[in-house]
Length: 138
Image (tube, rainbow, N blue to C red; front, side, top):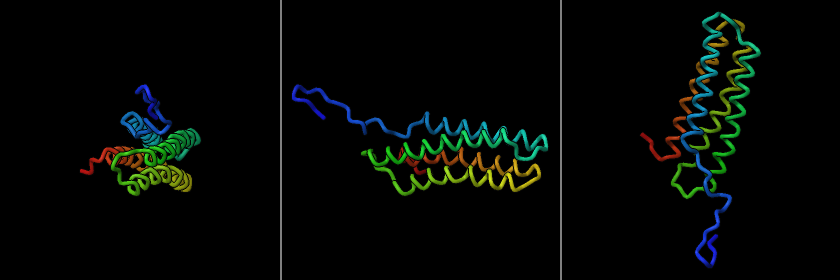
C-alpha cells in the first residue's frame, strides 16, 4: 500500500519466498537423517526409536515448508509452474512416513537402508523444488 507522501507499506504477502537457506536447510536435515540411518545400516541395526524421532523432526520441517511454499506460491508474482512445484512439496512430505512404515516392517538392517534412500530422495527433491521455484528447469 502506498501512502500519499510516497512511503510504501509492506503487505503481509511480501517476502514469502522459497529461498536458498530453506531448501539447503531441508537438504542438510535430510542428509543428517540419512547419515544416521546409514550408521544404523553399517552397524547392522534395525530401525530404532531415535531414528524414528529424527525422521519426525524432518517431517515437521517438511510440513512447514509445504505450508510456506503454498503461501509463497499464492502470493508471488513469479512465473512458477505451480502444479509441479506443489507436487514436489507434497512428495517430500509423503516420503518420510512411507519410509518409516517400510523401515519398521522390515525387521532386518535393510529397514534402515530404506530410510537412507528415502532421506537422500528428500534432499534431491528439495534442491529440485528450489530450481523449479527459481525457474531453472535444466
